[in-house]
Length: 204
Image (tube, rainbow, N blue to C red; front, side, top):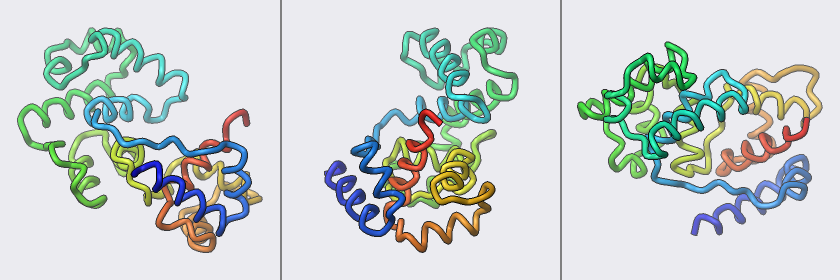
């Protein structure tokens, strides 16, 4: 069912946006896919904040390997800050990951049934954790829950991709981004449009 939605999204975006039509032809099908690894994905998103892809991937690999690729809130809580630092986490990010783990184990927040909640409800739940802001919550909505109509206007890659693909002289502000999306009828597939904008930055 989800793959059918993605094909429908491609047809819609190709019909309404010539820029995206070209990018879609170049990169083929979108591979967004919802998954149930909620905690893992949130930890990875926290690690990825303000880091290059290579640096973030290196830290993720060390952290997940340390736990035999079976990470959990309980395991994070029982791990010393010294050990987490040795795996590459900054003091700030280990605090964020510990806070997430503690809030989950004490049931202050719950990810159970989160896939059934609205985008706004998901954002409200997740931003109750230290270090999880709108951007991280939006990445969770797109890449974990597979929500198809999320437009992360604060993402630097999206800004850069729009600037390069739509011939802008500088990074766009939010109102310019929203206008481009509106003019080209990205809704109800803003997540898919964003995925292709990210893809267009490969090898640039």
